[in-house]
Length: 431
Picture 1 (tube, rainbow, N blue to C red):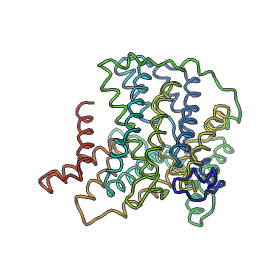
Picture 2 (tube, rainbow, N blue to C red):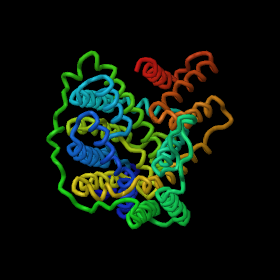
Picture 3 (tube, helix red, strand yellow):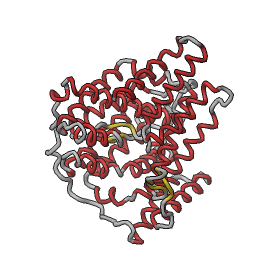
């Protein structure tokens, strides 16, 4: 078995060309985080340029770790949602310095590594019922579809109806629809690299028309010194920070769980019982990335659902993740190019992937109310709560209650489900 083939969790031959295209597709879909993450953390008083470098390096190291240890085609980077919690809840809302918030991320990451080394987290993820896994995948599909519609300028906020149709006659929206159409048509014809071709078409149209500025290719990276190793671990160990650390841990665990379930299922990297191949290695890589990110100077690093775009482009092994990581490391020097790919271009890819993921609903057991009701509720709650973890939590609580009242007693096989349901119930009540 070749070295590259060993990066496949199934041991199957690996197509380097497909993995390269998959890596480029996922990277382009994730590249927005190199700008959005420092923008959010700068509101907490952190240096924008330093966080930009920390974001790229954390994403690079995390993705390479996932490729080498997890052997899954999943890219990692500082997570959306976690960065907002870091800035607007821990720092601005609770008044803690950003150094303390970084310390809390480090402590939660350490706990994350411990439960990943021991079989606790693996046991929890493998205990998710098959129909709930399908509901989680479909819910994440709706979630990234909602994000794509926002990024494309198709929907916008509304005071009266929460969300409403935007002005879809704008060039950005039209370019997104064109990219989406190209991806769909080429995919239907089994054309290699369909997703990345759609992204590049929408991007080039934006650059040529002047709608989006092309910032160039190379630039010297700023210094990471203002945030590197600036975390305050001792302050994070105070009793008042315990709920914060637990909140970071819980969200990270189940955001990752939902992402790995969805991406691995779509890639066919699960066994006959729906369990993720090489799950323990993937969990260790993901949790280690959070520790490394905190040391570098950024919020929790996690697996990205945008990896689904790379899976659709042919990614099936850890080689995809390694190549994603290398692209993020290069992005330190290629910041102008990475920043030139507009959100509406990657929205075309995410919208297409969302349509594919929602197809999981077709496999639900529609004859059993105990099974399909919590799954469908998860698909609705995930995008509306704007949180993968909260969508999973609502689904688990509902599933546990239905099972309990249906049988009138606690069934031994459902013990992990009740445990997770109680965890989320505590989170919803206390945090």
